[in-house]
Length: 255
Image (cartoon, rainbow, N blue to C red; front, side, top):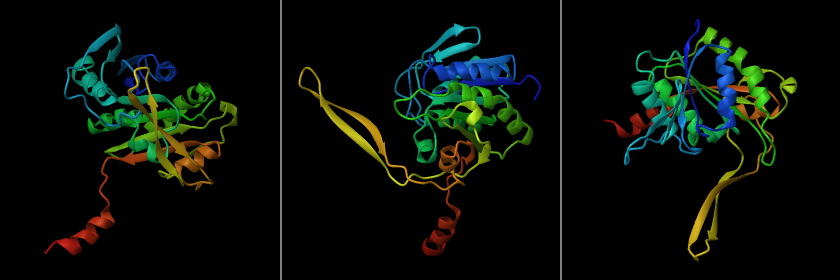
């Protein structure tokens, strides 16, 4: 695509450093770049919609808007209101601060923005910069490698009803071992942690988090690719139906 219209969104919010990185990436591909992102962080929002209160759209600059809502809200408002005159040729979501690997994709607002774009028949790519707790993301790794990777993806194309999930490893850009296409992995152990605390008035409140114990991973999965300092590319299909189970259930349940 020559000078495509590119829509950017995320789940880390309109002021997130990863969104600034994504803007620089997009401007290497086009000068027709639009941003519609949440006012505040929406990590873990998944593919949720705001249905019980009105959405507020705030114009920051001619092509940059903030929405008091979820990543899905942002994409829907962008298409119906912000860029209604011409649909985007490409949607980029991210660059997320942290991985979206394995089971992360079921929670991720970054993935959800790309999912909504795919539902609206816009080629969509989610980008995430992996980093370990206590460290700082290597934003330069995503910024250095993303433009060429996106061009290759667009040149190759991918299946309808499919979004592309890209994760950059937690290394400097010169240490990246290459691009690998991997299946969606699954961690050996992942459980939610609910920490109970008490506020100054004696009222309990809770924080939800995750505790993970990651052992050696299959190199053919997204987890394994990133563990080996590669850029993981995973196509995610919107159709979640499990074909083999459908066949087995038909035999068991249908006359």
